[in-house]
Amino acid sequence: MFDSGVLLGGGFIILCIVLLILFFSFVPVGLWITAFFSGVKVRISDLIGMRLRRVKPGRIVNPMIKATKAGLELRTGELEGHYLAGGNVNTLVDALIAAERANIDLTFERGAAIDLAGRNVLEAVQVSVNPKVIETPNISAVAQDGIEVIVKAKVTVRANIDRLVGGAGEETIIARVGEGIVTTVGSSVTYKAVLENPDSISKVVLEKGLDSGTAFEILSIDIADVDVARNIGARLQTDQAEADKRIAEAKASERRAMALAREQEMKAEVEAMRAKVVEAQADVPLAMAEALRNGNLGVLDYYKMENINSDTDMRKAISKVSDPEGEDKK
Image (cartoon, rainbow, N blue to C red; front, side, top):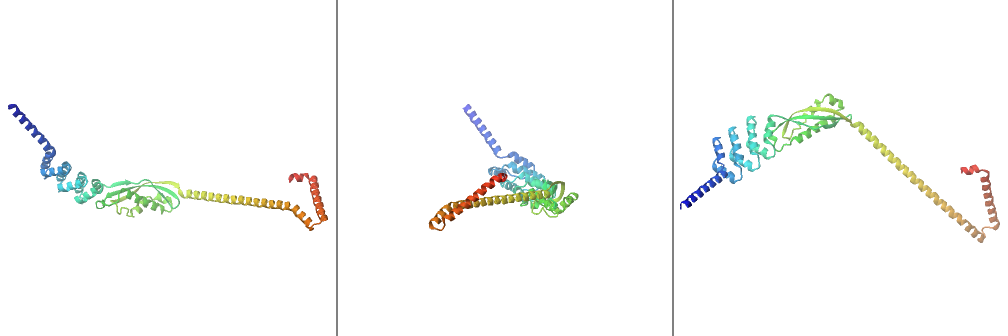
């Protein structure tokens, strides 16, 4: 009996220990004690509810302690709702504290909206206090005299809290500044005017209100570097001259091909005519025989014509013998 009682008592103690371990692992008593001594009013039941809603109590209570120590009045329900919506509670609280210290009007609702919009609300507050410098890439522009100018600018911007939600980002600022630089350089009569007075570019670009609809406010645009590049005008003229030359060569080749084709056509026509002559000459004996049968040509007339042909052939033979050089030339 004694052994069984000891075993039962030992089992009961082990069961109690296991239950206590499970209780303290599920209920963050240590976190509740920390919050209590930090002046944050949170109940054990609230912490258990967070566990049941699959919210890590530390992600809510620790930022709440930080906000309370900074003098901000926040509710755990607001922070928990922002956490469940996918927001970063710790960053949001840090941003609210930084805005309160910098005397920036940033409410919890606006900060939560900025955070849920995908922007870093703490970085936005920091940029609002400490302006940020955005460096543009090398921007190529051509003056009216055809000289290419490479310009690099530095844009100093400050975050605009009111336009962070729905406002354009840094890429839009860079694109607009680049467009303004290209327009300003393109309106310059000569590249020398750009080199002599580069601040005129920043003045003209700054007057265009490029920060409209963006999440930033442009404070200044400084031209960091201006370099002279290629002579685009001369290159275009050279390319145009080369293109005109190729067009002229193509037209000349076309005319030459047409002339060769016409020559071939004429040769074909001559050969056709020769063929017709040969064919006609082949019909002459037949015609003469027909004329003799029909009495249209007399025998004496025929012999007279033969004598004339013989005489003609003889003269041709004599002329070839007496003028051999002419024959060679022929």
